[in-house]
Amino acid sequence: MSERAAGSVEAVFREEWGRLLATLARQFGDLDLAEEVASDAIATAVHRWPLDARRRPR
Image (cartoon, rainbow, N blue to C red; front, side):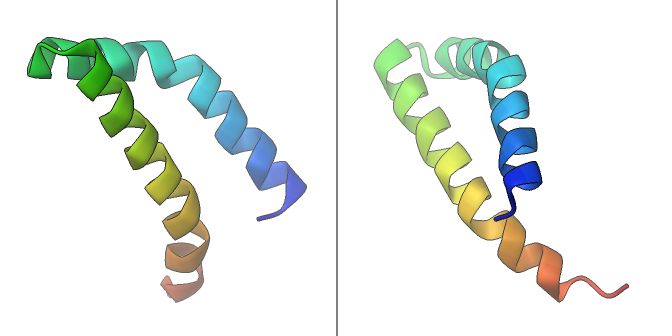
């Protein structure tokens, strides 16, 4: 992942983490589970985005 892309991901993470966590905690009724699910989702997205972007037709 390029430095620019990593900076963008980090900015989105900082801006949206609270909202994502609050939504998941409300949905699951468990803050620990919400944190685990959110962390896993972000880690998966960071791993997949570069792979998915290469497959998109231009």
